[in-house]
Length: 299
Image 1 (tube, helix red, strand yellow):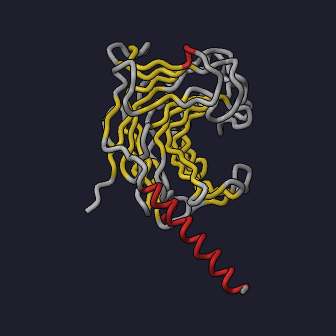
Image 2: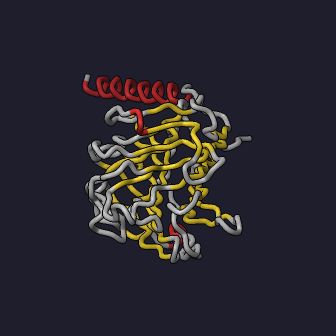
């Protein structure tokens, strides 16, 4: 009787997992697209902030205040908003995306002469949590108190047992502060080495500043590797920031949603300024020229 019961539970569990994965495979997925934010609405993205409603926090199809002739998606952070990812302005793709190439052209706010210790994060990323297969997140992040620094990485796993792989780079001087993995947000970091830590050095971009002009960033997501990159503003060469491979650890396998956001953090200072967790005092601006997606072509 006990063996029969165990078998029944096993069969039901397998059936549940299979049906869930089938349902996920039937979710709508985006084809290749290039969203240039020229219109006042988007057919590809919806607004998805969990924060307070405020009309000024986002606009689509308006002219860039810093690059005349370029229409953009404009985010303004709300000084009255609480801290927390997802509390600030955010857009989310209407459908799922998966393996393929992602890119965006954007310019973060310059806060150094106004509020040098501000705690604010720009996120360019994919994110979706599934109770069966866990979290799928790949990200670029800029803590705008220091626009020379770029954070890249992934989150996978389940609530309470998440896994981070990440790299922190100063692009102005080519310093790689760390390439590591850890469990959960406050876990101890362990360095990644060898094939998981390529390239081991990065040529700096002289005068790099994510707030001084628009830059193009992207990542290529495969089942067994992820490559983060950016375009050199002068030469137009592709600079590989991190080509992570050699292990399945940290590589999301399930479909995700494509996103951009801008939010206040009160507990995550930028690498170079440990006091940069202040609540924003101004309506600092993020400008996004375009976002693109090209799904991986299968044979």
